[in-house]
Length: 178
Image (cartoon, rainbow, N blue to C red):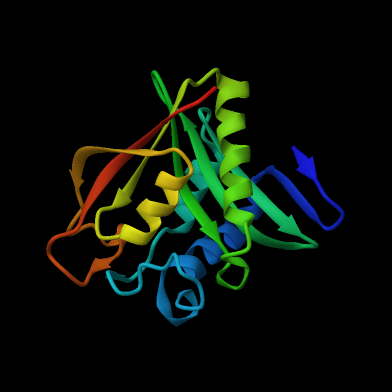
């Protein structure tokens, strides 16, 4: 993929799964996540992902998990999944101590290029919890458009967290590629 003096972007392998779970959890849940601005700690308790879900993302035939590695440490990741007529962007995490410095923006750019060049995707889609106004605004500044298409939060499925409120939903955001 790409490399700088101390930073490498590459596709994850099964040996990365435990570090990926730790990275995603640290960026979204618990007190450590509050160091960064992308956390969901005020909306959800419990887990954000688990080993089984990350393994499926890493090994899936229509999925690439991109990782940013500094030295031997994973500091950012995302999943790009090939779907029928578009690519789906998810599992986006930047270590809380590395947020706010442009690393996430760089990785999002790499993910968009990957979807377009590897799979010929003309569009990238994602879902974001509707209450995440600051995060949605960040994506809008990068060309994503709110669709108004809502999907209910999977209440009762603890694999996705323990909601702290009853009004959570996901909105689909879309960006044309190319």
